[in-house]
Length: 414
Image (cartoon, rainbow, N blue to C red; front, side, top):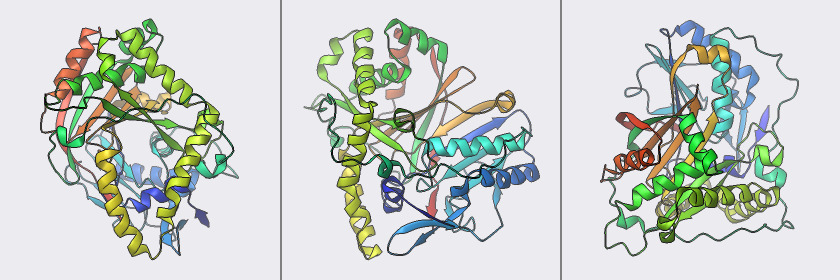
């Protein structure tokens, strides 16, 4: 079976091997030691419900997915630090990697298969199968429409989109060049605390936490920085707004810039601004317009042949884009879509995303009423997280940092 790829699927392959390559990382902590045989069986079961993960990457004038005829699924017994840093060629062509160690299971994947929402569904099915949760019948058909291509429409005009100013220049915030490594900070906060503050301000968790993190960064910008705005890309799942499900990538990005004048705003006003911009962005007309613009502006990059020329050009494009597109990024899964049985066996959960654009990305998810934030950054100044914690506490949100470590991203290599 052959599966065609869309704009965002192909982007991930074009970015492969560049500074913008990204392979998200999920890690589940269980209340028991992992049984390797059960885990392998669970992965095999989950593949029947998620056909794109059963594929290998192929190329014939363009990338596409094709059923992987190799039946051997590999899982690795290793901790996070020592796990293989390359998969694909080391996983019999499968575009994901599963590792286990003591009471943990980790999962990472190539974004050409799907986005974070699609991947967490696969991981959820793995955990259901592992704990013996009854699964539905395998569907006769799967939602495999291409994201941007399904809503593409040049005739649609955006509604009330406000052009955002640029953020500070990357050179004004000193960073450590770590290759595929970064510093990972895990922070936890009771979801109820954030919702209480959000309710008071008629806002949402994202619209509260993002501007407060921007304030923390501003405290650490050097005095000589002329532009002190902080631009943040917030990942938006287009499935809901467009009422269209798909197993392919269907995320888009909303850029919101924290501006100098926002320092004078109280939290209710600040939250209202961010929520208003996000609510406006998820109107169908704006999703369609944004997807159409992205496809129009990037398709030519993914159609360049020969492939070697495309890869050479993308390395240059990625180097520039990483430092100019935005300062930080925020991606939020919401409540993890795990069954109650699975959640009863989880003691912790991590969702991590290496900073492929900008120098800092926060990946967040809600597990059993705890909002878990994993901030990955490469700043030389390590005081930003402390500032963020203090600012959150000033507004009555009791947040704490539970772990700091060096994380190295694993990447797909074919």
